[in-house]
Image (tube, rainbow, N blue to C red; front, side, top):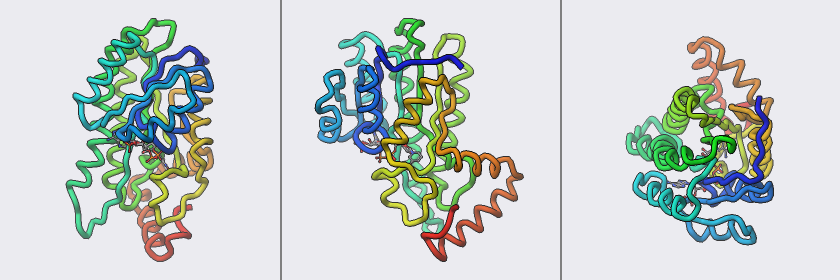
Length: 266
Ligand SMILES: NC(=O)c1ccc[n+]([C@@H]2O[C@H](COP(=O)([O-])OP(=O)(O)OC[C@H]3O[C@@H](n4cnc5c(N)ncnc54)[C@H](OP(=O)(O)O)[C@@H]3O)[C@@H](O)[C@H]2O)c1
């Protein structure tokens, strides 16, 4: 694996106004990167950027392809290029199949999948302008949820599974241009997103620690950054079982979750 460094990098980080992204923005800046942060909430971005000389905020909704292009144009005018784009923006809503809601699936896909596609479309011309020695790369935050068909995750899990495939396919096709593609698959992390969860979240990490794993995984040259390792191991084994076994296990977990929300999933 080729070692990498954050020092001297110019990073466009989307989804930086809270949680993992806000922690990551601070750590990248400390590691010597120039960071352009985006998300919808301008006030929250300003707070993240506060006190960091080499961090600027350019708000943007990634479901809006034109807005992504506009930010990319602003970056191009100001800096010329970027060598790293990190697509961390994401949303989670759980499905209740009793009131199956196609609009919910569409909402989540619009951010987690189509939003990532919009960002890649806007960022690619800037990445292509970066000098080859900088090692241009696209990193996106998916989820370990794609390893098993979890209950109520029809929208979230499917959007992240689509993202995984998109990234893997991109990494095949961008290889010849020297643009690397990195997938990040976290387990449970303590953020505003998981604050809504009413079930047990084994091996949950604080957002700062999750950000640290991403920062370090990148420097070690990893193409897949997954954490925490106990959950990676457990889900790695379960995901190799026949689909009928995976579904049976997930059904048991769903039943246990319905009976006692705080003694499950592990
Ligand atoms: N927390 C976990 O356990 C966990 C586990 C696996 C994967 N992940 C993934 O990690 C990433 C970060 O999540 P988090 O846990 O840190 O949650 P979070 O605190 O809710 O952060 C989500 C970020 O995405 C931004 N965002 C949401 N919709 C957006 C949109 N349409 N356009 C632009 N930005 C948007 C939010 O900012 P604005 O609201 O200001 O737009 C915020 O900065 C997500 O992709 C999530 O799926 C999280």
